[in-house]
Image (cartoon, rainbow, N blue to C red; front, top):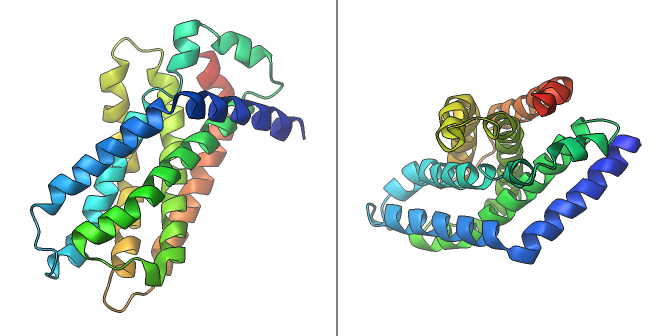
Length: 224
């Protein structure tokens, strides 16, 4: 109970900080919007190419957004030198990661849901028939990206070349979840949409495995 209580308090702090400034959400949304619009110029929205390649381009744009969003995950604490105080204020350091993972997942999912209608219009891909499944895939994919990205952000925040280190570590690690998310999304964009349960199961296992690893190693990541 102490873990959830501490994580809830820290999550409230993360949400208040972001929604007060709206700096991260605005920047990320505009960035992904530009990427989606630029990609759309390469395809004929009435052709089958949009259904074939749209899912991959969509998740590539979300990856760029996550890289931008996760870069500043621990920078506030690092710049103000409050990470040690934050560590002393909670009984379990995993509460810090749990709050940040939840906040990052919510921010990324909100960005994705805001941009899905834009994507549907630009690429002429109907999303309403399978919207509930798309939300599930976006949630599982965003959760996996946030778990891995938050852990790597804690590592790179203390490095000298952190702006370069995070993408270098993040991209190879997220390749499996991006491939699975793209395949499941592509199946939902098909003319006869279907759920690729194998991919959904992989996303769920990935999230659970990495969350367990973060729980086991969270204390060492904070201390180092």
